Structure formats: C-alpha cells, structure tokens
Amino acid sequence: MHNGDHLPERLWAYDDYTEFDDRPAESSTGLTSLGFFRAALRRRKRFWVGTAVAGMVIGLGMAARLPVVYQASTSLLVTPMSTGGEDSGAPITNEQAIAQSRTVAELALNKLGLRQSANSFLASYTVVAATDRVLVITVKAPSGSDAVSRANALATEYLKFRAQLVQAEQGLMLSSLDQQLNQGKKNVDSISAQISQVSAQPSSSAQQDQLARLQKQKAQAIAALTQLEQAAAATQASTQVTTDTIVQNTRQLDSAAVAPQHSRLKRMIEYAVLGLVAGLVLGAGVVVIGALLSDKLRRRDDVAHALGAPVKLSVGTVRGSRLNGLADAAQNADVQRVVAYLRKAVPHARRGPASLVVVPVGDVDVPAACLVSLAVSHAKQGVRVVVADLCDGAPAAQLLGSADPGVGTVSVDGAQLTVAVPERDDVTPAGPLRGRPGQSRAAEASLAAACSAADLLLTLAVLDPSLGAEHLASWARGAVVVVTAGRSSAARIRAVSEMIRLSGTSLVSGVLIGADKTDESLGLTGKPDAEHGPVAEENLSQGAKDFLTVDEGPSGSSLR
Image (cartoon, helix red, strand yellow):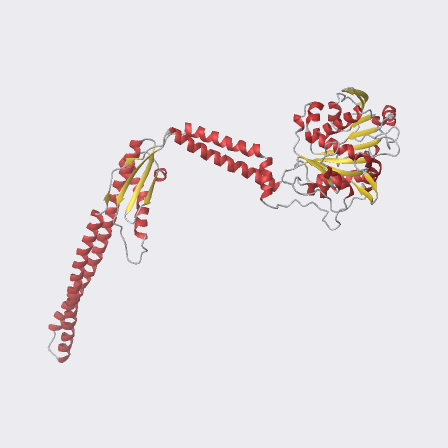
C-alpha cells in the first residue's frame, strides 16, 4: 500500500507512536550475530572480490615466472638400530633423524661437489618414514638430473654413515669386554704373586692357613675369568651377527627417479586457486576487522538513540557522485522516497512561510539533491519557494545553477525559485525568521523580502560543533537530520542533535541513507522528544487531510 507520494504508509504510523520509556537512551552498537558479518561483507563486496581477483592474478603471474621445481625420490630398506626400553616407533624415527642430520647433508654435499650451505641443502629434501622399515627421501632441484643425483648421493652417504655408526657401536662394546677380561687376568696374576710370596716363607700353621685362603681366591678368580671369557666370546659373536645383519639388510631399494611433473595448465590452475583463496581470505579479513573496529553507526536503532529522535525513513545506498543533476535525482526511487517524506515533514506555520532545514551528517550531495527535488516539485505546483544553501561549496545551489553568494531567482523546467547563498566569510549566517538587522549579509533586505512573499523556505545546513548552531532557528522551525550510514560516529550524530535543540529548532526526525537490507530495527528513540512534539501535533492538525480520512457512519467514526 502506498500513498499518493509513492511512500509506504507504514512510515506515517510513527507520527502517533508512543515510545517506550524503559528503553535505553544510549547507542548500542554491539555485535549480535553472523548477520553483522554478512552485512559488512555485503557492503564491501567490491573490496574483497577485488582482493580475491588480485590474488588470482598474482598467482597466475607467479606460476608464469617462478622456475619449475623438479623432485626425485628414492626408497631405503632399513633394519633399525634399537635398544631395550624404546617405544615401538622410536627406532625408525631415529633413522629418519639420522638421514636428516647436518652430518649426512655435508657428506652428500662433499660427494656432489656443490657450493651450497648445509642448511639450504637440508631445506631442499625431506625424509619420510613410510613404514617401520622403509624411508623415502625426496629431493627438490632445478632440473630432473640434479634431483636424481642428489637423492642417490643422500642415500649412499646415509648408508655409509649408518654403517660406521653400527661398527663404532660394536667396537665400543668389544672394547668394554676386553677391559673386563684384562681386569680379570690381572686379578688372577695378583693372587698368583701373593701365593708365591707366602710359599717362600717358613712353614707354620699361619702360613699354611694363608696359603690355603689364597689358593681358594685364585680358584674363584680363575673360574670368574673363565666365565667372563665365555660370555665375551658369545657376546662378540652375537654382536658381530647383529652388526652384519643391520649393515647388510639396510640398502637402497630403488634408484632415484624423477616424479611426474604437473602440466603447465594444471600448475597455473593450482597457483590461481591458491592466490584466489589467499586474496579472498585477506580481503574478507580486512573487511571483518574493519567492521569490528569501526565506531560508525549503521543500524536504525543506533542512529535513533544517538540522535534522540526516531528514524522515520531509511533507504538503500544512494551514491551522490552518480546523480548527474536533477534529472537523475528525479529518476532515483530512493531519492524520491526521501523527497516524499520531507514533503510531509515540513512544519506548517501559522505566520510566515513554512520552513524546514535539512541537516546532512555524512554525505552532503544526496541530501542536497533531495532538498532541490522537493523545492522544484513544489515550485511546479505554484508554490513560492526559497532555497537557502548554507553549506561549503553550495551543493544545492549548484544543482539549481546559482552557486554565487547572494539572493537570486532561477528557472528550472519552467518553475521559478529563489536561491540564497551566504557570503563565504559568513560562517554562521542569520536567516530571515529571527535574525537581527545587520548580523549577516544573508539576512539583508532582499532575502527578507523574498521570504516574506514566499510560501516555503527550505534550507540545507551542515553543522560544525566548533561553530555551534545558534543561527539555525532563524532559518527554519523544524529540522530533519539526514544521516549516511557508516559515515559518522555516535558522538558526531549526538552533537548535531544537541546543537539543533540548543538552537531552539524542533528536531522532527531522522532519515537514514544507505541502510543495510538485513537491518530489522525500528529506528525508535528510547525517550519521547518533547521538543518536536508540538511540531508533530501541528503537522497532524494542519496536514491531516493529506493522509487521514474520517468517515462518519451510523455506528460512529472510523479512521483510515
């Protein structure tokens, strides 16, 4: 259902709305759900899509420029060296660590005659334990032949170094056994020497007892030495068998071979996909983090709480840079929705012209286009309209083709309008409604005369907290704040609201431009605004016929 101005009728339901007293008056810009992230990604779709495309292009460039890396692999059958108490997977892990040691890498480099650091060579190959007895060595190199030679050299040097380790371990064990045998033999020789000394002494009962005791110790030492010799012989034999088994059963299963290379097309596809994913993740991450860190308001409720007035209309994104003049503005549906709302929001005056000031917060071009469209539409209907542009650069006056300071008359599509632009050095120009004589050039006789004969005074004004807004009440009785979503913080919007109230101008409502489609908030403020109550009441009493009809019937009155 739409009214005659093609504006949804639900917007006018707010005029009689009684706001909840228990709602918080502060802005609540909290993170709620995944919808927050979806909305942020939807708003910055061009950015993260651009980063994804850029990542894909970079990936394709890398695929074209980076040299092709060849790989060669060889497998080794290993009989791991193990000791008691180790875990089941520890022996093959130890073998893997030996193959990846700096010593083996240096031995391979010396064999190959390469002038390369051991660290860089270590980074060029990997050793993987395929099973508990098989190691796979994979080497990367600039060419296939280099990869094969390096893999074979690594396998050869690893086998040699490992055989040396096993033999060295066997030598240490045999040396330990020899030391024990020598100690046993020395013990026997020492006891024999003592027996010889005691035997040379004169015979006596004490001499015979000592000799018997030494004979017994010698027999025990000889028996221990005999057992030690037998154990040493057995250990030496078993150790030799174990060493031979480990060395002989550890060998290279197959010679190194070059792994099949991807086709150039497949390589480019892989790099493009990787670049696309990386760019997508980077772009989405930047958007999400930026949304988390931003203090700019987007939701209707958040803007209403900061403004202290309800947001009675919200439209989608309207890019002012794409509105090339009034023709484009007239064809833009969102602009026309704002114009229709502003038409209803103009406070009617019992004396003098009806007046309204549009205060942009964020973008200025779109509010200027809406204000000028409203002025032209009224002028075409025979209403005498004065447009005052108090903004830097006079964007509204430029749309009407009269941006020079002063008061002048312009003709747009056969309609006559009066345009007022203050002097550039007049930062707080006084208007014709409550201005003091001589306060500003904009309030001189020509402007006063134009406004006295006008039916409608429309003003565009950007408020600066450093300058205040005391002059605003001299230009309009009511104000509508047009907020661009994502362009202003809560503090900025709240400052504009307070400046309007301090000036004595009634704050009618807010309009949000660029609202998210996922925003389901109502845009209601937490406490009633006593200042704009009389204006709303006056609107309702004097403009009710525009959108209310009362039918008297036999059973009473009905309101449509």
